Image 1 (cartoon, helix red, strand yellow):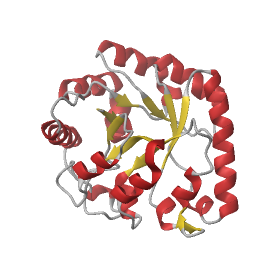
Image 2 (spheres, rainbow, N blue to C red; image 1 turned 90 degrees about the vertical axis):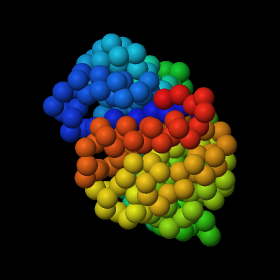
Image 3 (spheres, rainbow, N blue to C red; image 1 turned 30 degrees about the horizontal axis):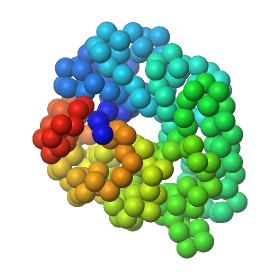
Image 4 (cartoon, rainbow, N blue to C red; image 1 turned 45 degrees about the horizontal axis):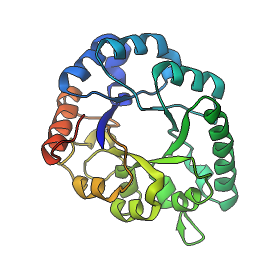
Length: 248
């Protein structure tokens, strides 16, 4: 298991200076990142990653609302091997029929991704846990509808905000979970209140241990009141200090 950084965390800095921001990420100690909106920045981002010795095992892209061939081609250019859809709105998680439709569309996207040698995944927010369908969270119901090759990236903070225990949910979702988002804070929807890993209410190390088939733990802040570079550095320090032999 290794650690990565979701670059959405640094979106403001990236808009000002992509190359310089990627250099800072490497200086902090990360060797992997998770790009977002990478179709638009593929050439510049790819150059910055190569220059700083960083890789991108996963990336976020809106597979169900943008050109999939364009997304998968850009992913291949960047060396991304898993493309994760990061957001399906809350109103699409309230009925079995809507969840079934979303799963079917992602299954189709996964078939196209496979032709590029790329795996497809999905990343949750809190509403997939707040909605209950046939006695289970919508996320669990959804997972059972996915083809075997699809994976999940469980945002463990939003699971908790959605009223569920991340350790329990990770156990229920089992081997399909290959990535998690690691973040901490007071477990509210106030994103600016988020904190570096180990400083909030999430039992971060228990959560990581509960993801039995985890490939990459992805550090992320949706927002942060303090210096964001200090925040990600503190998160990485906590994680690496807590796991001997774990690389960033």
